[in-house]
Image 1 (cartoon, helix red, strand yellow):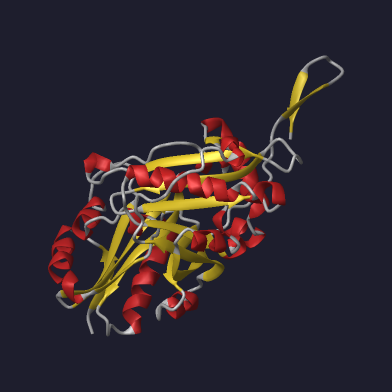
Image 2 (tube, rainbow, N blue to C red):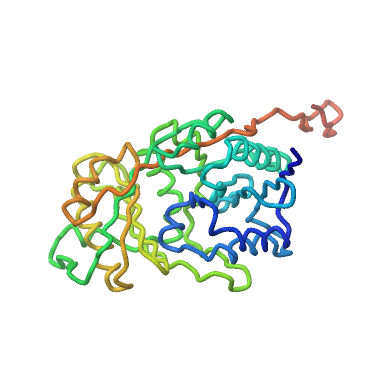
Length: 339
């Protein structure tokens, strides 16, 4: 059987566009696939843009003259050395080797381009989960996706709630403290997998090439540590709004002083969401944040799905000692360099 797995070209994209109705397409990149879904052809065309910094990559599996499956990967925010697999597509009855060869190709291509980690989010009941595990992807945490699909104008904020007053808008100077908050509340195994830096907590806007996609609106808030143990942050909440919905991200220290602020923080971003458009609202909760599920349920949310978050390590940067010249004073009074 003659087959080929390679990076897609423009002719491949035309074939994909013509046959996508017969394919099973897995969009694997929440929250963006939920709040800002993009037209498939537009998304694929972006991978062909002749720009200096590429962040979309599409690989196809051709069997003879037809495309049997394809895969899309994308650079992670502020991390060109990390990719996320965002889309997989193949016929429902495609043999397992189609998925395996597509994944093998993107693993090899990523390694050749200096990528050190590959990420993917899969529903925990997805049959292809076993394929990822067999190729070296490992589970580093689970995530529940909660949603209020009929969110309307009924949400009100208690303006007289004293806990609401501790919230303030996030600023650029909060990046370091947000990194410290993340380190304090996140399991070590998750930190080792994600390897976030304070740069990724900076307030910034995601650039969209040539206006091919509408931007996302972000509103985020923090509060100081209410436990009084340090001068850092006690919590963080973010509302991300796209064309098709809102996404809430929440992070807080586990002591009672900071946990009591969480309901007020949730009510505030829900109040903001209503005023930005009556769209579905989603929230992702990782397994070490399970207590937030009760608060969401009280506000009309329902559990929609459970995700397995996987990572594959392609390389791990290590620090190696390098010789350096160090001056020292000799009897002649001259500076001499030595290793």
